[in-house]
Structure formats: structure tokens, C-alpha cells
Image (spheres, one colour):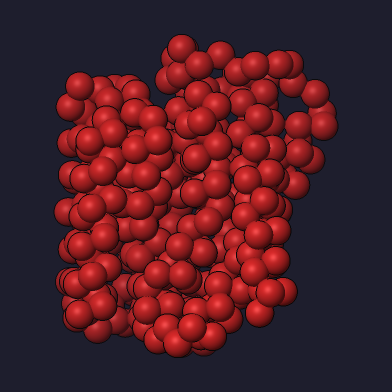
Length: 306
């Protein structure tokens, strides 16, 4: 068992180191190509840190496990907005911008409502998945074409870009993906040793583990004052999960779920709306509001246990 604790410790160090590489290199790349830190967080960083959800969801779709595909994305998104965004805000209040709220926040609300409507019949057809994927491509194309620096004008990246920043970014993403994977594996072994049930493991350790890349990147980002990368990573990751991962999964094989999965989707929709409203109030996500998000997610977990 001491080996598992050692692996757990190494993985935590790996997550932190990988997150540091991503935040620093992404900031310098943003400066070099004239793209804001927020857009970098919404695109490159978000797609990279969503790799665990992508792998699990697509594998489940290929195996005909529709409930797992949808539950993984919905559960991860709730965890991202509740525990991670709320927890990061608890560490340090996060300033927001008009574009973050009205452009990206409203896009996240629209994507969640779109999925909610598509799944009224508890089924996500291939053509609905195609619409979702096309929506993501259009949104990302718009962000890249605009290349607007004004999103984070108050956050000038430190240092100058060098070509080593590209492999540093890729290496950072790879490191947190590998560390997150082994973190989940070791945590499951430890939990079973102490008699924790499979269900509790699934809704806590696995959900947190697949979101480990987002947690590491966002926490490092906010501690280093890169608020745009931190928040952009979470919103972008949620958008990529909803529109990209689920959209592609549905195109591979139509997804049919039970009523419980739809109930979780309703919870996600409500949480997304609350988060956007909180980001708008005072153009800042305060520590008190972060604590509220963490508390709401904790209550949801307790309800799941019951």
C-alpha cells in the first residue's frame, strides 16, 4: 500500500509541474501570436486538459455504454464549475470581463441548453451530434480569427516566446494527463483497501481524477495571476466536453440514456446559469461566491450518496 501512496504523491507533483509548464508556455505563446490569454485558455489549453474526458467518453460510446459517455461529461462539467472554479475562487477572487461573461459564458449556457433540448427524448442522435460539433468548430474558428488581445489587457505575459515553449506546452499537457490517470488508479486501490464502495469511488475519485488536468492548470494559473488562462481553461473545457466530445461520441453511435442522466443534465444547466450570473455581479467571482459553488457541489455529492 505504501507504493500506492508514493505513486499518489508523485502524481500530485506531476500535476503541479505540468500545470506550471502549460500556464507559462501558453502565456508566452499568446504574446507571440497576438492572441489573448483568455482565448489560449479557451482553445489550446482547454482541448488539451479535456483529453481524459475525451478518451473515457469515446471509449464508452464505442462499447455501447451511452450512460457512461453522457454521465462522464456531465459529471466532469459539474465538477469543473463547482469544485474547481469555486475552489480556485476561494484561493483568490477571480476578476471577469465582459467578453468572458457575454461571449463565452453565454456560449456555455447555449451549449448546455442545446444538449438539454436534444436529449428531451433521452437520446442524442448522430445528426444532433453533428450540429453540436459544427457549433464548436464555428466558435473556435471565430476566437482564432479574432485574435483579440483586449480580453486580458491587464495580464501581460512575462518573458519572451521561444520555440521551446511549444514542446513545453505539449509536454505539460502530456504530463498532467499521465499523472491524472495514475492518480485515479492509485486512489481507487487505496479507497478499496479502506472499504469504500465502488459507487462512492465513481462519483468522487474518478470524477475528480478525470478533471485533474483542469484543476492543476487552473490552480497554477490563478496563483500566478493568469486569471484569464485559469477561467478560460474551465469554460473552454466544458464547451469542448459538451459540443466536441459528446458531439463526436453521438456521431460514432447514437447515445441513449436513462432518466437519471437527464436529471443530472438539468442540474448542470442550472449550475452553468448560476456561474455566469455570479461572474457578472461586480465583474468578479469572489471568495464568498466560490465557497457557494463548492458548497452546492458538495450537497449534490451528498444527495448522490443518499
